[in-house]
Figure: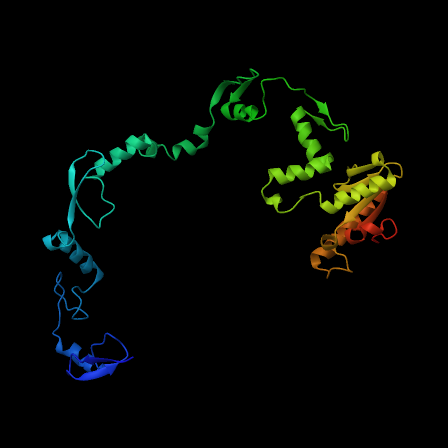
Length: 326
């Protein structure tokens, strides 16, 4: 589609693809700019860069806008409506296009906020003491602080707050021992958490699913599904009460996976990716470092008087025929 137009400078008819066009060529366009007289700034009187511009700079443009808003033509450009102030209910004039104006003054706006928000974060006292309240001198208060539940005395308010997190009205049983590892706990509820996380593997799975949002996508965190399956196979092979899970050796800063009591045997289940199985994985620097770490733990267990064997997770169904050599 092509359209006919009349050139503004030479008044000739020309055809163009655009619906709206003013000049037939750049030559006519430049001539039209030369014909227009020079324009001067309405604020400072300096020459403008173009005949279509009212001001010469941004500073003059801001002043020009302020002067323009005071004129009657600017105020009456849109239809005016009368509304009531939301606080004092006085009649005020407002343009229909202005959706922000709802109060007659800033005082009415601040008073409305104080009334609805009850003065919080708006009073002068709050603004002055905003940073002072966060200092240590204002946080810690020294004196006699008594617990309402057990009537214990404390020197400051922070120690009382920490005490209230575990204090209860009913006197719970104190110094409770774990039946599996003989660990001592002050409260019985601390023992229940210990049993869930350390010893009861099936409850450990459900506990991690329900508690942590990040573990809803994966079934386990510290205790993997493969480790639980292998633990059940060891129970069938060596006896149900003869195998312990998560065993520690004195003087070794490591928690071994399984321990067989009768044979004085430690069994480690190594993941193919983390520990670096050459048959399945391409060895990285991290896997090579992990190999030396595993070797150090095996030597420390042998020095402590234990026998130790290692099994890959990919070959756990072939236990005890195929083991990891280290």
